[in-house]
Length: 399
Image 1 (cartoon, one colour):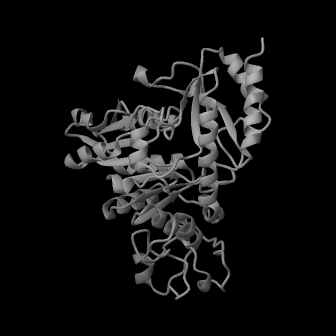
Image 2 (cartoon, rainbow, N blue to C red; image 1 turned 90 degrees about the vertical axis):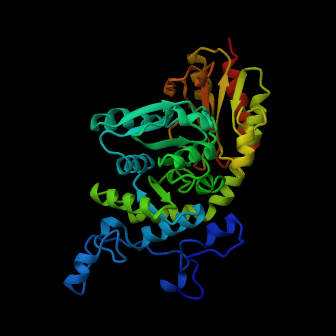
Image 3 (tube, rainbow, N blue to C red; image 1 turned 90 degrees about the horizontal axis):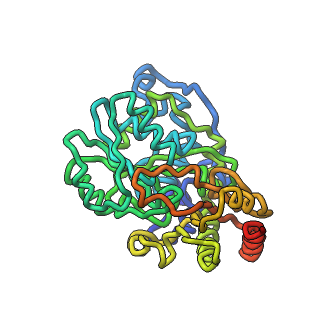
């Protein structure tokens, strides 16, 4: 790498500066700031020895499906910002999760899955892994070190999500990973909420971190991608091998767009964090609201964990309303003019998602006591968002 390479950020730099620098080397591609988009399927070789030596576990590319220079730049950037040793890309966050689950399990294994997990993760464990002879047991996200009581001789993986999907419980990750390591069990965490910036899973003992790049890394609601980052050579080999066997590929265009999104992610997430906290505090004071589920609020039951393990917060949180009928909650969401209604989150546009029907919890204490709305804060002015929320409350309170 040249003297002027931007491939690795210097030590001691802030996250915002590192995000600008990582994953690019202008002096290796005609001194242009952004890396080019490299497309291709066939890779040519000088000799037969190289032809059969190349592949995902080699230092030589064997085929375009493995990813070429554009994807490599993104992998380098994600690995550096997350503090891992390697990254495997996937065409969506869910594909990344399922890739990790396929790499980590076999028939006869036992998996522990947090009750607060992303719904499709639960479904994949139940309907796909279950058909392959893998048993999934749901555990309370606030179990902490008591998870030791659920470990069996055939337990192979603990799946964490902190904060939890829709209900935003925080998990005592160090306590859980300590138990896992003592029993030779792998750990996988969904770290999409902090995008590798505000929590460092590897410092907390996690083996594999999944991030849905569709959210904050892409940042513009026009990318579908996911990533698995690890700090273990053993797991990197397993993930790359399964990635090849499943024929998974991420397009150069999506990798390039995600790299572009990284350059502004620090600024975007700082704004979204600040405004989301302001919105959460404002909503918490409303008489229509029963509870605001935002870990950075002192009222959150897991706030102490947030203070210990996080340096910031994502711009996504939920609000539990008092006992209004679902039709009124839906009417409120439909009345918004700035908050749009749709799936996904982390982009520039604020979203509101009525979520009560999506929540499936095995532990009754984890089910909200009222209708729930999930809010994703975008880049709009906070005063305009407040006015839009007030517009919705006027509809909610109408006779």
